[in-house]
Amino acid sequence: MKKLKLKENMGEKPKTKAVLPWMRSPVDVSLFEHCPLHLLPSLDPRLKVGLENMDISSLYPVQVGVWQETVGPGAFQRDLCIQSPTGSGKTLAYALPIVQALSNRAIKCLRALVVLPNRDLAIQVKEVFASIAPAVGLSVGLAIGQSSIADEIAELIKRPKLEAGICYDPEEFSPELQSSVDILVATPGRLMDHINNTKGFTLEHLCYLVVDETDRLLGEAYQSWLPTVLQLTHSSDESFYPHASNFLPFSFNSLKTRRRCGFERGFKGKPSPRLVKMVVSATLTRDPSKLAQLDLHHPLFLTTGQNRYKLPEQLESYKLICESKLKPLYLVALLQNLGGEKCIVFTSSVESTHRLCTLLNFFGDLQIKIKEYSSLQHQSVRSKTLKAFREGKIQVLVSSNAMAHGMDVEGVRNVINYDLPAYIKRFIHRVGRTARAGQTGSCFTLLHKDEIKRFKKLLQKADIQSCPDYAIPSDSIESLRIIYTSALEKLKETVEVETSRKRKIGFKSSKAGKGRETNHSNE
Ligand SMILES: Nc1ncnc2c1ncn2[C@@H]1O[C@H](COP(=O)(O)OP(=O)(O)OP(=O)(O)O)[C@@H](O)[C@H]1O
Image 1 (cartoon, rainbow, N blue to C red):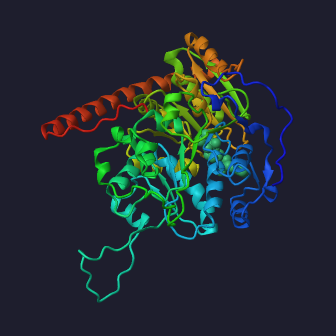
Image 2 (cartoon, protein in one colour; image 1 turned 120 degrees about the vertical axis):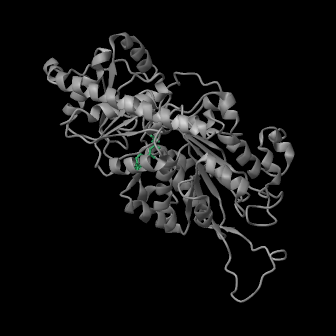
Image 3 (cartoon, rainbow, N blue to C red; image 1 turned 90 degrees about the vertical axis):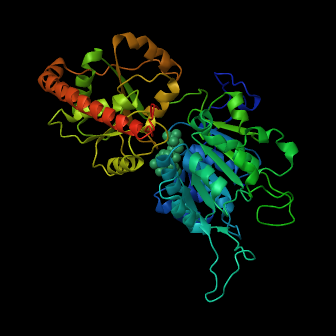
């Protein structure tokens, strides 16, 4: 195999010491060059055409690095932990090798599972697979609870056609159910629904497991989806995983999807190949106990550069210092300066997202379409808002953390931290919604002067020593004061109406004996 060209700056020692031994000697993917498709070793010509149809003419460094360890000489022999900055192309980095590896499969069954923490992210990743997989005859499914479970099952499981006119005795004849998909992109909750309840849904042939946005997925148990998946894909030799039964859901014993010992996935008589795992994040956890949950096999750490936290190269960061009570005015003045460019405004909670968005919409003649996006909203509302934002019908999205991780929206030129994020990880994910795929972008953080020190410390963690001030002329602020006063009044009235409506609903539902499920998350 032709050796891919490396950049010059090799040999520096990592700045932060990783606890786990395998994390101390990573592959630095920033040392790889972009690789034009015609030079990429072993690329299936059908996939080359598929990529070109997506306007992709070369692979990004992280994609080249992963290719080396999968289709290239690494040959999927080790599990991969992939950390590279937001917008650097991690999705295609794992999707392309998986699709290529499955391109010669003879029998259709579920071979690759990609798990993501929420529906919008899963839809986004499914689209990436769906744009390359059909070129080599593979089908991709989605299990996210967007449609009814019956519709989802119909998409995922194929029932053989029975001959008309023949009466089948259900006691004697149980038709062989088959997977309709080779690759499944799922959220943990719906995945568990299928594992526990869907006839014919099996992980026994699974070859690839991708855990994307790993930190988020490992941070919450999500019905023990991970130990369940690992158990179902292990050989039935209990000595591999002696304590599994301690954390598996009680329904597990009734499952029929346990891998049969001595059977290769779909092919009798061969030893079971190992399940390959790929673990992906822009800010991968270093916590050994969290990573241990993944039960990794000789993990190989692929990362970018020396620093654990890295911002996109083309990102410009500014700070905007103002009095707390004048923050909305500064935000409006900033949005006016940005002239209707696509922008995401991040707040610290779902409640402040709602309040801020409502307030901004009371600034009558801004000529900017502004909407909120948060987990307080119904999924269908969120998806509609996201679609309109992607299409440019909405210019500004006010969001809590729901938009911060993984979302890829073309043309987002600016990110505004209306509230200072508490952690560097959150900062990295938020600002990473812009300056993606080599594009330029700006981020602005609104700060009260008491927050400056904390902000500096936060940036130092990502090796950023300075962040210039962004100045808003005082007359721009003054000219907004009158409309701000009236917008505040309208906001107060709206909040009162909403609070009394909520109280009434709460009263009715508690009378009916079913309290509404409230969402206390800060998403
Ligand atoms: N080789 C490529 N050539 C051109 N564009 C690409 C290439 N690879 C990926 N992209 C584009 O780059 C953008 C970012 O990719 P992706 O969403 O995979 O980034 P990411 O690293 O997963 O980011 P995050 O950490 O925020 O999830 C997408 O719009 C994608 O279409």
